[in-house]
Length: 379
Ligand SMILES: Cc1cc2nc3c(=O)[nH]c(=O)nc-3n(C[C@H](O)[C@H](O)[C@H](O)COP(=O)(O)OP(=O)(O)OC[C@H]3O[C@@H](n4cnc5c(N)ncnc54)[C@H](O)[C@@H]3O)c2cc1C
Image (cartoon, rainbow, N blue to C red; front, side, top):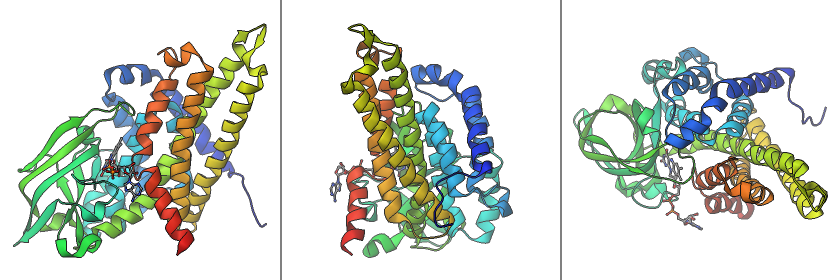
């Protein structure tokens, strides 16, 4: 059989059960969480237990889900709550570098608490300089005896408020660019490590981002993940998978806006007929429907390549930028189709719009992904 676009019965079952879970556990809390701009703690606990084990190999207590399954979960979570998508995304970012590069001792020590839902690790790559150019990060880690001394800062770090430790990238050899970066797992509360100022955002606002400060922060050498100066490789391999959470999740966000717009267009009567009967409306929705299909194909194709252990950096970049820009476009179309209701808080389409704008700038901006794709074209 040369090609098959269908999901297996198990994947369909997973989608149905996640959809039901999201409707039961997340949907009733969304309005309150959006109003308070913070997660419901009970939900976070349930979410961690239910989904974060997917990132962890079976040998360390996880379910070792494949990337297509993770994308199915992401799409359904994104449909209901953009901010909740960050729990799955950052959950992966915080542990995958350990799965990829950690020593056996580190995997045994640091992964089971994620698999059991007990702990959550954040991911700190972005520095004071341009996040698009992490190889030039400033945070310095100097080895002294059995410790590394960290000085500098990080910014825009997601979900520190629910994290127990932060997977932090720092320069161990400033002369070597990307090949001089190492990864450390640093516990919240370590002396000299401060979770600093919150950066308030317009979208994904149930989740928080903070600055991190390091003032002569002493980190034991056994918290260096894997090998010295290989942290950037672990981070890039990790991003190839976690960017797909944003791709599939933003397909979910695009679908959510689309469904609201379709229903509204059928019910809203203007000039004696439903507004859906005007091609100005129905063609816009036809375009979005086409692009949702295209974005889904891109995301699941890249996930399928990952399952087959084929390199998929280019395909992931295509899927990530396209899906996030589509989520923005779909939400913007819905805001317009709903007229004054689109602007109001009676419908969540403005939330979807701001969430999509946030995701466009996370895990690589649209321009950075186009840079990755164009390098592949011209190489
Ligand atoms: C909601 C949210 C959550 C985040 N969470 C985390 C997190 O948990 N951990 C973490 O480490 N980081 C996180 N980030 C940071 C994110 O990775 C960076 O914002 C992103 O990499 C962009 O970096 P920057 O904001 O410094 O923008 P810059 O790198 O300064 O870019 C500014 C603009 O210039 C463009 N640009 C830059 N270089 C080029 C180029 N060569 N060609 C064309 N255009 C270019 C960019 O596309 C962008 O439009 C988060 C960001 C957001 C918005």
